[in-house]
Length: 210
Picture 1 (cartoon, rainbow, N blue to C red):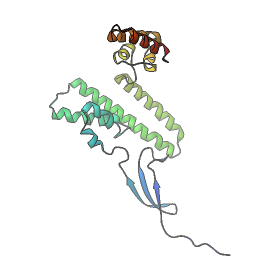
Picture 2 (spheres, one colour; picture 1 turned 180 degrees about the vertical axis):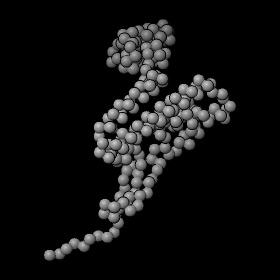
Picture 3 (tube, one colour; picture 1 turned 120 degrees about the horizontal axis):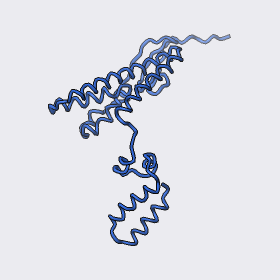
Picture 4 (cartoon, rainbow, N blue to C red; picture 1 turned 135 degrees about the vertical axis):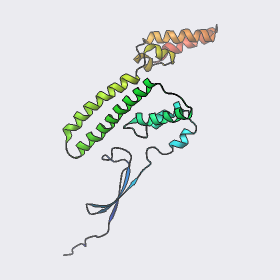
């Protein structure tokens, strides 16, 4: 009977950057001796690489959506530091009311960030029930964020002003037939008296799937 020799060499294992237990984009190069972790080398840069180069060709308003990816658990902090830079360079005086609102929103964002750390951490160590309670409280904070910013809310007047159409316009409360009449009236005035163009326009409008 032959007995296989026990291997003594260490094993190198890549963990991440996409792994169910990572809670984000992080790569770890692990050196293992059996089940013991001998060494761990974190590899960063999978999320926010090249942001400085992108900023060279963007205005401050265009660049704001990028900075929220730096820390997607507390996005208002990255937005605040990005806005504070141009304000200080341009010697722009921020009203006290705006400063107070910023501090309140930043503190709420910090609490939401800590809750999102605490919930998965509790679940990872086997406490599943606190995970749901923590996320319930976090959703209350997000309700405040939505109320303060109006994210995702477009009323009918704003939808028409922005030229939205189709499902987006209907979702804002504008009736489908009314949508066609608005577009028709605007387009009729722009194309003048060409009967051929008008007939083609009417045909295309009422045959389209609104």
